[in-house]
Image 1 (cartoon, rainbow, N blue to C red):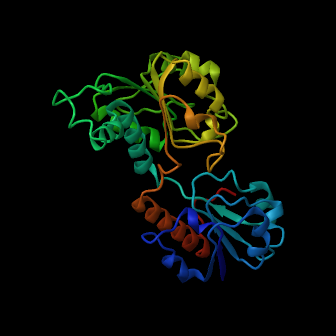
Image 2 (image 1 turned 90 degrees about the vertical axis):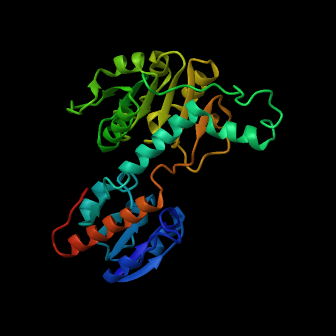
Image 3 (image 1 turned 120 degrees about the vertical axis):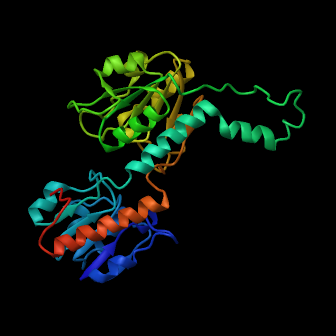
Length: 315
């Protein structure tokens, strides 16, 4: 079998390799194919494995032998599912591989906001502590998480993992989910109630027609004055200009963002110079152990497909 990996640069590194995929056939790996290169690169492929490569009628048109697409991702909005169905191409995604990692990053961002670790580290390395009049200079404000209210939008696996961490910090946890779920230590409320009562709002819902632009000027205005907004889900769930305005006006006390609508970040992204905004480059899912787990899931999906018992099928 001929297997083409279209964007290995987004998954592989020295610690995460594709060796276990070689049992299934002949691998051809591309670091990051451009859109106009995809069709020719996968022309003879029986299988295509990708993360974010756009696979649609245009890029798949020459792949007459293609019968399987395996995704190094949970989301599959980059794949034209109806077109694949019309061609008899099975598409399988990889779910639940990054739950622990994203929950960890969510709290890393929250803690950075409230503990100011990077700023205090810079204070010390700039030599300012050696010139301080006191052993404990109160340069940057610190706050405890204990007793604060965390609002979780989206109570899937990641949202529930975030809730467990919040419970360990002795926080009150509110959650909004389209369908009610019984989760210990979590009070489920309408979205408006969550926004009005949360010191921190963190987003963990998928990007779809209901969530696109969900966090806009109106929703930011509903939040408690000085609240923190955290997004490690998808950039499209927020309106970036509206978030910028809420930060600049002081309505929000800060934002911690791991995802943007355009990635990599555009040169003119309005959030780049926003006040009190921490941005990381879509790395919440990217610890080595997480990507190793992802590779195992992708390999297992292929094995099950070849055995006639496909799993994680999205078409």
